[in-house]
Length: 416
Image (cartoon, rainbow, N blue to C red; front, side):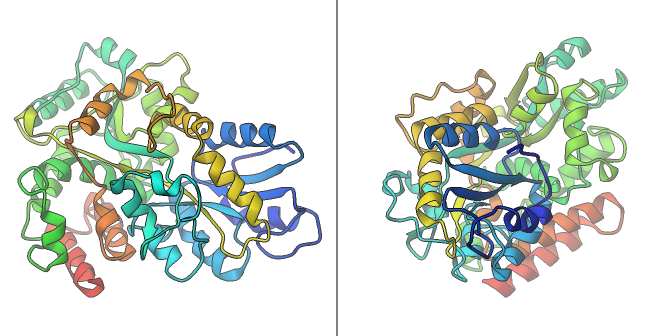
């Protein structure tokens, strides 16, 4: 059948039309698998390879943006209309994260899969809930500045490696009529990316134990260098680092700006590289750490397990669903995903040859100069949601950094 990138809201319609005698969210014939994914631009090749390896299997899938997906998947699970397999984030940071979905029993335990015991300890810790593995995490991702090399060459600029250099870079780019970074804050999940890139260095550079201190009630957002990071984010906006009207720019539109050289790049996860190449196949895109101090040796990068896949605990097609997640975690599946997304595989021995665009990210990971995505270690998803909406409000002039961090502290304490 033909496949389209359609909203998750249409998933119920697709599953209802999948044929067969089974009913519910994972209905359809025994050879039909339903899948909801946020891996736009990469899951398509994985699905095609899986179907080729399993003649007679038909994978009916939808892809959608993270905001829309996270808002709806929990409702679909509780209503019995969720797909057989679905995107699941590591840890506990959003409504579709491992702890959030595994706790109520929505996900099938994957601890018995052959790949589960092979996950590296940092990956395993965020793929599990209560000691059981629920998420097939295939890739490691980082957040940084993704540059359009052709746009940089045209502007005669090079990526900065200091905070002072970053602001000078933004001013120089603005003077040439090409803003440094596209920022799509219309999709509120995007608000966190610049923030996380700055927090990695300003907060965790001086104190790698910050998360443990937060969990023990010995530290807060408001009385920590989180204040420095938010102030630097606002400074970037005031300096002209972003295009006009970030709040009116979607994630999709920000990709278009960076891919076509309307900006010199964007601050995003490395997963965006595949999407940029799709919009500009002749373009060259490179991942670089976003500096937050004037000492390049202090710079750290947020790098952690990316979104993976979980199996609906109530699927009627358990064996087919397990076969799919096993394929995702096989060398073929992992290499297809990571090659398309510009990410790095979670398991060794895949024969993966990293995209040259990721050379700097790979070096940061190899040398231990990374920290987890901040939300993965927070006590529940509400802290992140407060941060996302609060950052939008700061950009619209409706809130302040002090108010935002106080609200995050309140939510963190309430959930701890």
